[in-house]
Each structure stands twice: as C-alpha cells, then as structure tokens.
Length: 473
Ligand SMILES: Cc1cc2nc3c(=O)[nH]c(=O)nc-3n(C[C@H](O)[C@H](O)[C@H](O)COP(=O)(O)OP(=O)(O)OC[C@H]3O[C@@H](n4cnc5c(N)ncnc54)[C@H](O)[C@@H]3O)c2cc1C
Image (cartoon, rainbow, N blue to C red; front, side, top):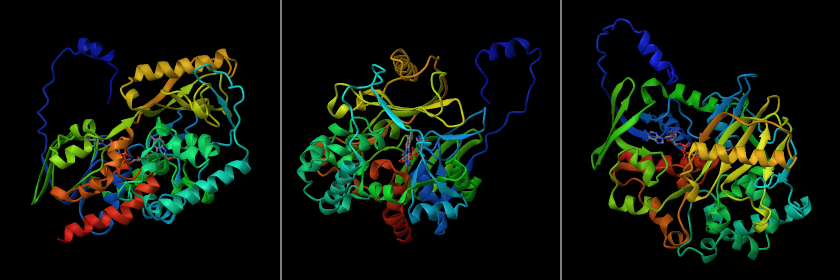
C-alpha cells in the first residue's frame, strides 16, 4: 500500500510502543522452466501463452504488478467507465480473434473516435490555421490505393518484419517525406500523421519506418474494421492471460538482479516483494525494449555482437494523460497541426490530440516528441499540456477551465528505431541473426513495429516456431 508521505511523520509520532514482529524470512523460489521470459507486455505475454499452449513450461518476469505493458486503462471513478489509454484497437484478423478466443475474452467492434468529429488547431497558438484543408475523400482514396500498390509491388516482404532486400534500396533509407513527395502521395500525410501519432519525427526518418508504421497490413485493417475487448477494457486480455498462465508462472513486481547465460542454459535471478526467485531455463526470451537504458535494468551482460547492435537503437517520447477541464465537452475532439511546418505537421514536443471521453467529464491527451525530447520530466510534460490548453482557451477554441491531471503515463522509449546509415548498413539483417544465440531470443516492437496485431502475427509465424525448434535440439 502506498501511503502519502505527509502521513508518515504522523504515524511515527503516534507509535507509543515498539511491537516486535517475528522477522519474515524471504522465501527463495527456484523455477525450472523451458523458457524464462523477461517482460510481460504485448510480445512477452503472447509468446508465453503460445509456448505454454504447445506444452512448454514458461515463467514471465514482469516489473509491474500486472501484465500488459502499454495496455493501460484509466477507470473513471465517477462513472466506472474504463478508458483505454494505451492500446485501443486490434486488427480484425484470425490471429487476434483466436488469441482472445483462447483466453475467453469477448471481442467487440472498436471506434476510437467515440463518434466525435475532429477539428484541427495549432496548439502552440490555440487557433485555426488559415488555408488548412483536408483532402477530399476521393483524392485521399486514390492516394491510399496508389500507396498500397507501390508497397505491394516494391516491398511485399516488409509487411511483417524488417525483411529488407540486400542491398537496402536507397529510397527506403531516404526520409519518408521524400518518398511521399516523389510518389505524389501528399494527400495521405494528415491521415498517416494521425494514425502514426506517437512516432515523433517520422517524416524525417528513413522511409522504411513510415512504411512500417503505415503498413499494408494497416491499410487492409482499414477496410475490415478494428476490434477490441467488448468490455471496453483491453487489460481484460492480460488479466485472462495471467490467469491462464497461473500464479507460479507469472512473477510480478519483480526486479531482475542477474542474468546468466551460457551454452547449457540460462538463469535469471529476481527480487520480488515475496522474496528471491530464480528462473533456470533452457532458453531466455527478452521482451523489453532493447535500448541500452532498458537493458541496463535487467543487468544483462551483452555479447559484443548484441551490444554493437542494440546500442544503435533510440526511441522517441510518447505518453498519455487524462485531464479534467471545464472548457471541454465530451464531443470535443481536437487534433494538433502546425501553422508554419511542412504539410502543417504539428510541432514537437506537443500533444497530438485532445478528446472528450463520451459520457464522462474527462479528456484524453496523447503527447509526444522526438528522440531528443525523451528526457522530458513529468512536470515538464504536464506544463506543456497545461500551456497548450491555456492557448486553446485564450484563442476561444475551448471554453474557460482549469486543467487537472487525473492520470499520467509515459510510454517512452517508443518507436525504437535506428538512423539511416545504420539501416543502409544492413542492421536489420544482422538483428535477426542474434535470435537464438547464447540460448537467448529477443522480441518486441523494435523487431516488428508498434502494433500488437503485427507483433502477434510475427511471433506466430516466426518467433514461436524458432523457439520451439530450438527446444527440440
Ligand atoms: C498510447 C499508446 C497507444 C497504443 N495504441 C495501440 C493500438 O491501438 N493498437 C495496437 O496494436 N498497438 C497500440 N500501441 C502499441 C502497442 O502498445 C505496442 O506495440 C506493444 O505494447 C509493444 O509490445 P512490447 O512487448 O514490445 O512492449 P510492451 O508492451 O511495452 O512490454 C514491455 C514489458 O516489459 C516490461 N519491462 C520493462 N523493463 C522491465 C524489467 N527491467 N524487468 C521486467 N519487465 C520489464 C514492461 O513493464 C512491459 O510490461 C499503443 C501504444 C501506446 C503507448
């Protein structure tokens, strides 16, 4: 239980006699498993469930007190309504339906907009941008069809993972904005930017990343529609996964203190509130972001090859918050654009969108920035959001109201990627070659992209069979 700091001195002052409790010996636990998995977010949980289904023993070691990673939900205390503040939508494809079906979680159609019509303003001024216009439906449809055809004809193999031709085509290494210009696809920019919110300065990064974010699989999903947990709370999937895997196989609130790997197997040592746990495994699956900073948190000694690759990864700032502000009503949906920026893209760091959550007095906010904004503190981000809402109020875009934060989460590092020279140098070919070495496998968005349906498809098609094969040897 978390007690507010202010209460602690009061408790100390009122304790008259010291009560001696028998010292609780932390109980050490040894788990012998086929696969020890570090990270119980989208990729780690999916792999755990599928490996267990195939008869392999697993243990998932997760830092938080629940599984789910970016699948976070704010439950409105006034109405009891769950509001997904991380993962909102899944593609309507068999793999998603099968996974939910296996875990007994009912699915329903998803509508992220809540029916509100989005309006566009520059949040740095709070005002509309003169001359800004969205393309008409016909122009947008034609551009999307052209985009789909180009990707299908030129890059059919990067739909799932980063399976790049060798040598890497020059146009994939040049900025995404150039790809869009050269193919006359300007009409899709606003749509990509709203779908790709969270990816920071995507337009300046290699076209490869734009194509991965706004992928052929996503285009197909637009035609089919999206789905999510029928309850409206996507964490239900992870609650069900936790139950199916069983208490002995899900190690929550854990701090990894040591990872040992050799040709015979692996050993992960973990501190938990209940005591020390050691997972001895034939294989290790690392399912946390493979950036230097994140990997430091599991004290893993990387091989020279792993270290050379992973230290090139960088992520961007991305997160979400729920605020109250009387100037909003629950049908207000505002999207951020930039007055003087190319394609009227919003300025970063900033908030991608504000939307009133239907039936509540709460407003969702999704904020983000570039690689260089990743160190912004919670206070700095909250000040940025409050400043934008003040701008919108001053410009008369929203009514009068003070901003109060009722929920805040920072999902960084998000969209873990590498720079253009690194892509050109064959990084992704080498990346997949680390799989299985030193009895270790790697997974997560950095290996596929930030999309659960895509991660699960790749895991099903490639990663899980690879692990299963390695267990037979
Ligand atoms: C705001 C937001 C909205 C999104 N919307 C969607 C959407 O609508 N649809 C969709 O498909 N995707 C969406 N995504 C993307 C999706 O969440 C990611 O693609 C997916 O979660 C990536 O899975 P992962 O396993 O790589 O990482 P995560 O899900 O982040 O899992 C990593 C896990 O590792 C754990 N971990 C980290 N360090 C340690 C440590 N030292 N020890 C133990 N555990 C550790 C973390 O706590 C976490 O549980 C969204 C993401 C965000 C942030």
